[in-house]
Length: 263
Image (cartoon, rainbow, N blue to C red; front, side, top):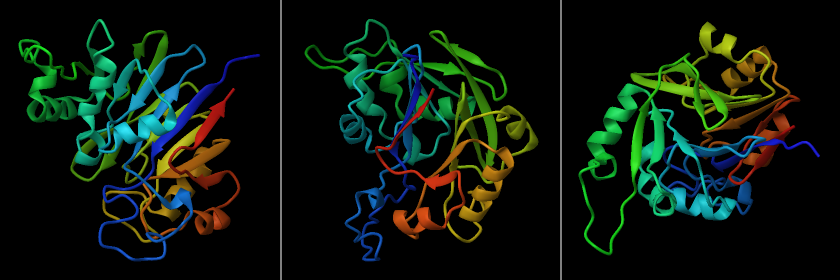
């Protein structure tokens, strides 16, 4: 049997998560498990077994346990916002079992923020007290549009605009993961040509200054023409079942724990 690449959605919510603190709306009170959305993150596992974690959201430990992810080869950071990086301490569970530090890939601005906020992870001179441990990461700078390799797997970072932040999505073979984009420039559309599984953020029903709306994401999905497009970074404005029922063929909302295979 031919091995398949796998995409696992660890979290599919916005920076607030769902349910949102202090909110009693229908979605926040929903009993549908697909309406429980932790902060955005994902894992791509290639047919050859390379396992790539995208971002380290605040609920990372819980997400990884739920998805039964016990090892990774690298972290691919999309950008520096807190909901995408502040679970970084949970990488310690991986690094205490590695002979070398974990490679952390990202653009210069993202790596600068990681070094500034978490110096104890990046500083090779820092030594924890005897009997204690710390996460150990090596910052690996990347440039949008320039492929790099993790083990035997080529990864293409794709630049997308997100307000004042610099953001990259990633294409790994036939799978592409784009989050926190306001639009897809021509360079991104070219990089996504022929992709079979596409992930796009879709924040709200009305326009937002830094994110694709649901209608905008659907329009982009139809232009790209992937076999399957999954929407992530969803708010409590949309119940999963209701949103799934109204989306066109080939486009669907993702949910925490969803696994998509691409053979």
